[in-house]
Amino acid sequence: MRKKRRSAGPIYVFAGVWLLSQIASSSTGLGSLLISAGISLLAAVGVGYLFDRKRKKQDEKEAEEAAAAAAEEERRAAEKAKEESSPYSPEVQAIIREGRVALKEMGRLYSSIPDPNIRSKINELMSVSDKIVRDAIDDPSDVPQIRKFLDYYLPTTIKLLNAYDRMNSQEISGSNITGSMQRIEDMLDTAIDAYKRQLDALFANQAADIQMDIEVMNGMLAREGLGGKSYLDINEFMKKYEQQQKYAQENDIQKGSTSNG
Image 1 (cartoon, one colour):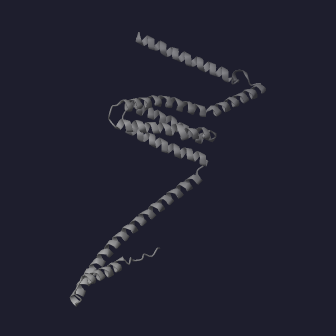
Image 2 (cartoon, rainbow, N blue to C red; image 1 turned 30 degrees about the vertical axis):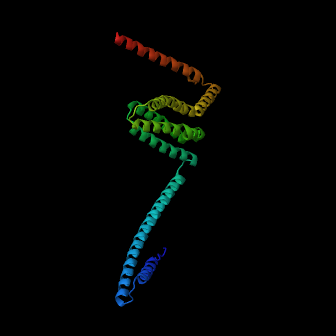
């Protein structure tokens, strides 16, 4: 613990006031000396009090800074321990951490912007963004693609939404404000489509793996003579699926026409 030294300021003040009072006084009697001593003592006490207050404030400030530093160190240690015990790689952990921060900010903007249309778009962006971030857990090989999304696309969207929020809070109609807000609204539709495409692109590797597994399975079934109805023809499966979807849609249209008629 650091030993605190008392300031010599009061002593210097006492001596200085004593000397000045003696120079200014024409009398050298006992009364004059006592008056000078009293004035010097009061001045020294006053200065001592000011020094004490300053020192106490400095001590309190240092104590607060030390407590804050200790709390920050404890927080970092807890985060480090959590990361070390995490089953995910540091790269995936960084994706998760940054994704949470971005989603929290988007949630704040959702609450701040009153326009229900914009809030609906923000909600959709948050939903797709969360799925993109979670994909890093399911498929760590997608981290480079997700990193690009987190480094540019998501921060840029948040930046524009913050600009929209600030302009909207002005409650003033003007060509610059109105035009900029409209452009941001149009951009959100583009962003939603781009986010969905990004999410779909992350599953390209999985789609290729599925196709390969199906082809391997088909080959094994063919070699073992287990083809026929059990043969997994992906092209035929997709063709039948599309036909079923088309049939269902046509049925819905016909039902709707009948009910309207």
